[in-house]
Amino acid sequence: MPQHLELYFQGDLSEQLFKKQQYFCSELVAYCFIVAGLLDPSAAILYHPATITPGALGSDSTFGTFFGYILSTEEYSVPDNDQFYHQTPFHEIFGSSA
Image (cartoon, rainbow, N blue to C red):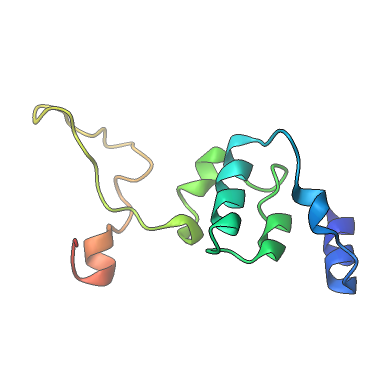
């Protein structure tokens, strides 16, 4: 990983390095953001499977902000220990839910 950073800053890192047949799930999400133009290709260095995990995606504002839950039944109650339950929701950050 450190050698990838050095190569990038030297201008010697080939984009082919990031094109492969198999991806770790969180790495695939990051690459989708890169392909869609939401992240610069250089971000692939930071979102390598050695540095990002599926659980980390939910905590990284690069991939969005918590909007809320879609519940299949009104009786369902989100557990108090849910990882997003105590995070600031979208409407409190941006002042609107739409």
